[in-house]
Image 1 (tube, rainbow over the protein chains, first blue to last red):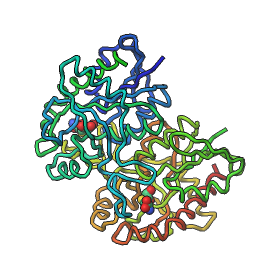
Image 2: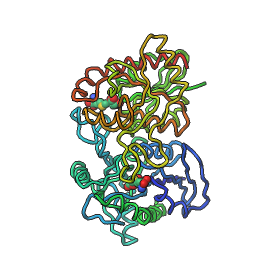
Image 3: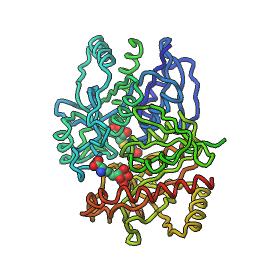
Image 4: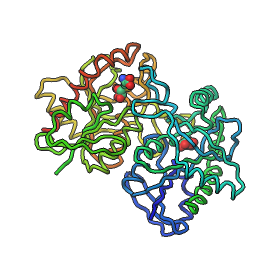
Length: 229
Length: 229
Ligand SMILES: N[C@@H](CCSC[C@H]1O[C@H](O)[C@H](O)[C@@H]1O)C(=O)O
Ligand SMILES: N[C@@H](CCSC[C@H]1O[C@H](O)[C@H](O)[C@@H]1O)C(=O)O
């Protein structure tokens, strides 16, 4: 039977999921908590990684290697780059880049290191499931590139640069790390984000105000997907 | 019996190690190669992660979770911040920071995210082994903080900022990622770097010139440590 990993970065991003699980069992591992359980009869393991690329890589790897998950769904919030995206809107990644990876001193493009990829695509079948769920719920769903970096961006110029350089529509701090792990370990994965802010001057205030409500929008959508997988 | 992980970031950093192993067995895993073998009767698993924090996190985690290593030694090159450090000199980390981790928009210090640490200490016993080896070889060994980030720094101002902000003596692109993994998984670890450049205007030229020779200095030292563990 398939075992689905559901991952967030912060407690607020997974709380609306954990509270809906049956047969909950909490496992302490890697200085973190992993929530095993089931949802509509499907086996799931849920965890928040803590913020940033390194914690996200560790948690995604452990969900696969240690907990035996064979599919990974990420749920969380993001800053908007695209002007189409407003607070609470959902975006799914069709590809993920690391906007702060930079060995351009050696003539490489931004986001690239040898034997890596600038943009890593997500699983097409999971994206199709998401579109089906969105249709059933009557929810608009944007698809685009999400850029990841270890900085909370609250700066118009930096955000514009990321948008232009990576053709990115949204930005956050974990997605591309999960992408590297899942593509390396050959595990189908999916990244969903609900907009919490616009990565500009007001980003930190908006983030604090909308984290919970946007995280819940994303979490509810992910749970609906689990039913369809 | 103990199993020692030896990790580098680039092929050049582990080549001088692999060529010295007995009973070599190459395992393809996670879009990478892991070299199992033995050295002076000690079981080792050697791998280069590819460049940067995400690949380093994935590889360190796999070396522990998948290959069952219970000690991790990192060998590689770094840019000097401290003026005491010249090309070919060795530095061991007593602590590691992520210089590019930045959620200061929320009032946190640089390098910090909730439930994380700005500076993660390395294992004291392994540092003692290193000092013993250095003494036996008559080699000077600097101890200090190493700062890690996903950018190859070739800029005097940025380097000075990193030095001041984190009290760092050298900088590279993987150490602090390994530190997060090993401290989370409770595995003693050690980070050694030989200087390849000074993280300034000439960094990329120096790096290309001295990568191989400095990587070998670090690798030879790590192998001498394996004999003593
Ligand atoms: N308010 C927090 C910091 C949030 S950093 C931003 C997170 O959300 C972003 O969209 C990223 O994915 C991060 O996980 C604090 O003060 O610690
Ligand atoms: N010459 C390579 C880029 C090296 S990036 C720098 C690496 O060494 C540094 O000290 C870091 O640890 C990195 O692994 C290239 O052109 O791809």
